Image (cartoon, rainbow, N blue to C red; front, side, top):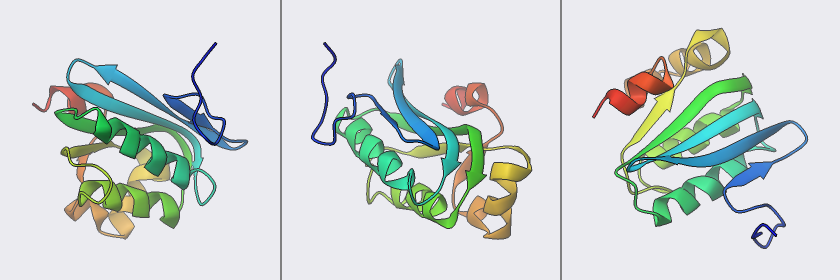
Length: 127
């Protein structure tokens, strides 16, 4: 039987009707894979798993937005929160490419603040 938290979510992942966030480990890096609409409904799940990942004290946290179908301001706020160390104490890298995820980050000039990578492989290899 899988271990669950107080919200009933299986530890290590969080899913809602419009999307999901999954926490994975690759060497000393924690990877949060986000899929679906990263909006007001899914943003709290991203924060919850980012906090959980931080407790594992990874060398780096990578937030992979490859599977995101819509990036709302609530999702961008969680990316900034993690980057500024309010949620996570490790350095944060964000995987974003294309008009759905990269374009909103460019329009809001968050590309000047966040460490953005075009692929998960490049984010993991950045050392």
